[in-house]
View 1 (cartoon, rainbow, N blue to C red):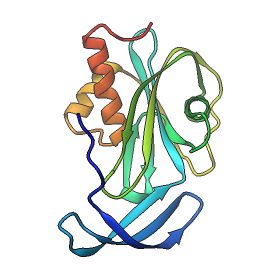
View 2 (cartoon, rainbow, N blue to C red):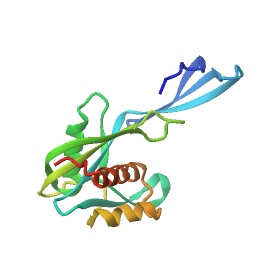
View 3 (cartoon, one colour):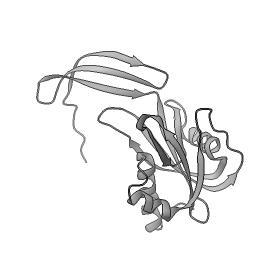
Length: 187
């Protein structure tokens, strides 16, 4: 597919909020129709990292936790953040160990995506982790996690029924389902 040039013209920009995780900028623009307007952009200071930890029996590890921004409990893959200028795989290894106590011998990047590209620049990178070994989990103090090991097909059905709604988890589970159905799963 062909990429198009940016039809938005930026007249000015102002940083309106900043914290250790995000920065919000308001742009004064001319929109694609040539009319003046504003556009808000949330810049994330980390990459989002997700891990499908798949064992030899096609079970995956899911993390349950309360998510403050949506005021709901959420079941998701092990996930976290990694520095923009760091190696995403290093962040994935750290997050998997931190949240589940698992280490993996084999890692494959399976997905890159933007999580909400109409308002933010947050990029997610998802890895498939295989040949797992169990160690002790080291969750952060802000994380009260429940870890469950579930058959992959059960998690896939939960995604299909809308019981799992985390974007990284939904996309990654669907991707792994495709890889499994086409016999293209690494290792």
